[in-house]
Amino acid sequence: MRKTVRWDNLTRPEIEQLIKEDVIVIIPTGSTEQHGPHLAVGSDALIITEIAERVAAKVNERGKKCVVGPTLSIGNSIHHMSFAGTITLQPATYIQVLTEYCQCLKTHGVRRIIIINGHGGNTNPNNLALITINEKLGFPVFHVGFWAGGEEEMAAVVETQSAGTIHACEGETSLLMAYDESLILPCYKELKGNIERPGLEPEVKLVSTFHRMEWTTDNGIEGNTYAATKEKGEKLLEISVRHLTDILCCDQLWEDCK
Image 1 (cartoon, rainbow, N blue to C red):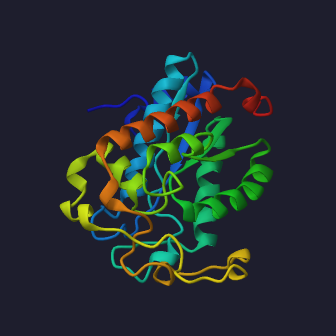
Image 2: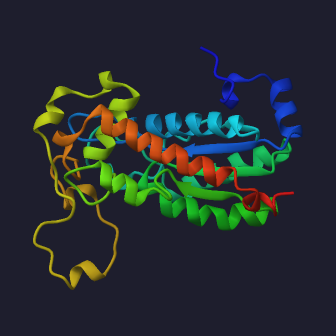
């Protein structure tokens, strides 16, 4: 079915007209990586695309033009490479791809661009990329996680973890349930995983480093899948879409994108 909120579903003349109307272009960034024994490896990309499409529809309802660009479905997932199914780009490659993506949009006349991220491993590369992107384009491109503004509300939806979403957890499993229950294997009802490496000394928790997922969990899960429900997923989607819609509809955000 044709979706008019998707760049890749539109024709050239339709895109040209949207650009004339100061369209906001969402770039969803996800990943293709292992999500435990129960979730599809494309979960991040699927979830963030669904969120972006819902946000674009709401923004259009509020009188602004908004369209969802092609999802970057391969991200920075080096930390998952010990688990089968993961496909990753090196951070520098990922940053270059994102930069060239934004340059293409500018070439066609787009001046309002926001990256909506659905994968924690992309957070630092996205923010780093904006240094080069904004310098090259001459106007600000923005970046936001799908959880922005709704962290406390999301944490209140889940029952067994302090954060709304971690990885292949109660929250993320619920989100994919709300999108398509057929993508989740029944074994989720019996699974859980460590949120951090067991037995860490308080002093160790004060520093940061890069480490692979097996340093924390042996099954690729961080959080408790068994507590996931479709109803929780719908609530998490609603919270995310509501806050992101408010962000994109804020006129002050786009003041320097002229």
